[in-house]
Image 1 (cartoon, rainbow, N blue to C red):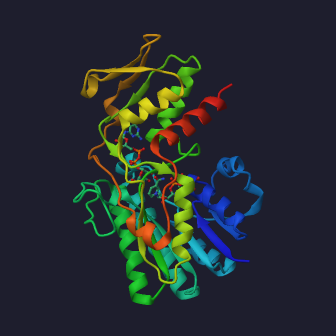
Image 2: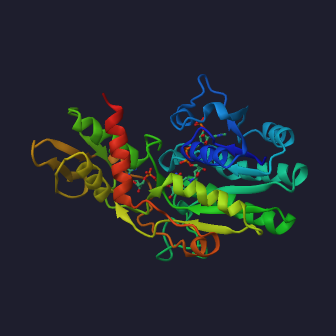
Image 3: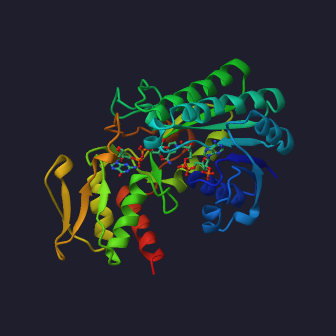
Length: 337
Ligand code: NAP
Ligand code: GDD
């Protein structure tokens, strides 16, 4: 039986990856932060909370990384933990650097000294492309991060490459474009949209407040992306891969797709901070803009080229963006009674 350790097992990707590995017959270990009440809701939603072995863990602390690497002796180590919300990273720039950047080298150095045969996956991100230097973005596109989160992830990305080249570790980075699901954190824009629209469809009056409606993202389904992570670690040689759908969509269009699922027909008017969306049947204002959701520096356009992953891993995204909006909006609507 193979063994794996997942940092960030309580997060969206951690939960989906845990389920996938359990289905493949792995013994799954995961790191959980000590907080007043551990949140296992995603693992519970997927029905795997009793099948995982949980360890107290924080990426900011070298000693517990050392301890879990030594005690668990896993075949595969997936580093999915991060301060993952870009918007907060301007308020927590040092913490983002510590956890998302230095946290990676803490793990790599423990693996180098204690478990050099363990295969390592690093959760790199399309946010590293930031002010994009090429369209679409691939493994060879020059990086230009636009947030403290993105800058820290660039360090994590390059230190993973460096440990692979310096010490021969089987260390791979997945440069993943945005991926979502009904388990997506509530602060990320897709889930914020589907939760708010579901409440409005159930009778709530408060409109959905958003920031930049013109940003474009390449959105896929998290279940597909964790499969790609696992496939990367099954290759003979470690490498870096982009995972993306190759389709880009504005925030505005995602709102419209989710609204359609909930039988809401939106009419858009105005622009910039005066933009609104009104529901045609009821005349209700459904979307307004609030400047507080604008970012100090924006990533305007993300669209990925995952042809390397298609060719070498046989990976491809199976859920297109309308289907994703529908899946999330339905799930949020059904959760409200
Ligand atoms: P998520 O749902 O926000 O989960 C983040 C996880 O990291 C949570 O389990 C969280 O624990 C844990 N964590 C945060 N700070 C930690 C620390 N100091 N020590 C240990 N654990 C810590 O994020 P996700 O969407 O699953 O993303 C997984 C990874 O992929 C992240 O590294 C993210 O940056 C990266 N990524 C995500 C996407 C995407 O679109 N989802 C795209 C590219 C890359 P708590 O439950 O205690 O908060
Ligand atoms: N969160 C949020 N809330 N974003 C908004 C809002 C709002 O009210 N209004 C507009 N947006 C815009 C943001 O300005 C951004 O351009 C876009 O919606 C997406 O924001 P998020 O959903 O917060 O995701 P992200 O793209 O910044 O980051 C996610 O994807 C990265 C990969 O590209 C996260 O999952 C990161 O961890 C991940 O690395």
